[in-house]
Image (cartoon, rainbow, N blue to C red):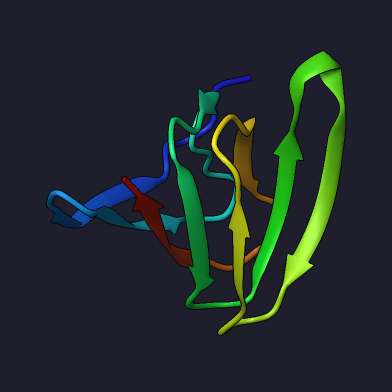
Length: 95
């Protein structure tokens, strides 16, 4: 199944951080990727995410707008908007 791609807009990329805004239409995905740096996510909207993970596992999470969380380098997944409205978040990667 082919899904539309999320839109990534780079906001900052300097010696210390890379900040990217991700916007997803319903059903859009990031595509499989592995995070090469520790990162922080700030949700701009409520985010109903479907996370495809290694080994074929899939899980759904609902993250309220304005939530901030962090993950360590090495996370591998595909993020999909599992909701019926657009979702957006900002990812700050720590160099």
